[in-house]
Image (cartoon, rainbow, N blue to C red):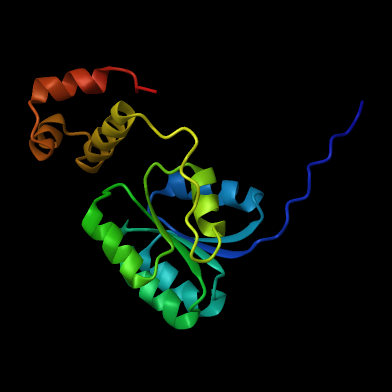
Length: 184
């Protein structure tokens, strides 16, 4: 029986990952670790803030909305400790105002969740002043809409009426959307 050896991955540096979604954080930490980053994960704003001075990371991937704080506040702290840190902000609440604020604070890029790990790596490793390549296969508009609805539904503790009210959508329409499989 032949043994297969994994191709060694070039070490890329330390990375701080701050996200309060446990399963997403664990999956992303594992994926980024396999891509050569030395990942330190934080589940909260306070935990990430505590790690910044001792870690002084080369890279950071921060959720915009952490349960106990705002990821944008971590950007300025990272810049104070290490001005050359490459920072990517992730959010399920993508809008132009927060994207502009993230970049003004010093973030390298701003990606909407669920971001593909390859897009995150490309954003982190993009040449200084350069822009990362656009995704080869971006999500369809139907998929983006479906992901947004699912996110709001989860944030409303799976309460259909509350989700429909926040999305300004009829409850029955929302129920039909939730009953369908996700679009590609």
